[in-house]
Image (tube, rainbow, N blue to C red; front, side, top):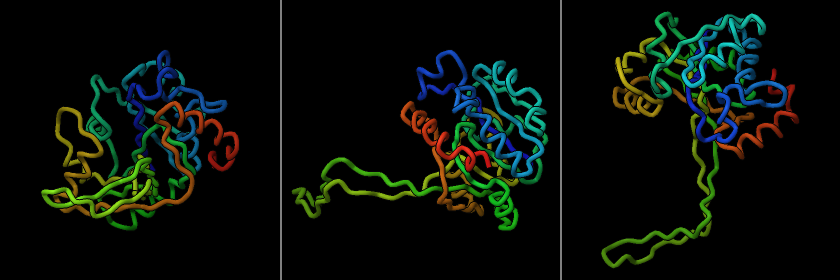
Amino acid sequence: MRAVILAGGKGTRLRPFTTTMPKPLVPLGDMPILELPIRRLVKAGCERATVTVGHMADLIMAYFGDGSKWGLSIDYSVEDEPLGTIGPLRLISDLPDDFLVMNGDLLTDLDYASFFRSHLESGAVGTIATYKREITVDFGVLAYEGDDHRITRFTEKPNECFSVSMGIYAFSQSILDLVPPTGPFGFDDLMLASIDRGLDVRAYPYDGYWLDIGRPDDYDRANEDFEKIREKLLG
């Protein structure tokens, strides 16, 4: 199993924690955020991970080194300019036929080995780990029709449930043909292009634990949860 961990962003949503250090090194309990997915990858049998870096890359590379401390090989792909979530993959020339890609700021107990095995067995060119997220609208919602705007429906603070991307993917090499040779290219661009081409990209619904550490309140929750379910998260 080969993995690519995306860690090149500036972490602007997590300021002020990221003012003086890159987001992957912000502490989660007694370890930096990026160490958690690395440990889980080792548990899943991953032997090599490529970490894409950009902002404060030297600090990240100095801390994680060659990965021998954790029992896997770590190498780095350096972005000279922001390339989005998928664009950095075109800089990695030796990716295998199938590989994992994940954001480096996730807290989850997803079994990477089972996820990757499901992708291989499906024959899909891409598999996206998804999570049910309920959104509450904190207002009364009105629906109206016609030129006179006559109200036809009212719902007080409705709940909507969506399947959202967990930021964890399994890809086959062929899907990279959609990535342009220059400029930024995001996950949203890849999904729209895949749907437009009619490619076989599938969801992998997951109902375990998942948290995207994007904002300061997410970070506070991550630290609380990490202490409570540390052993589960570390595998």
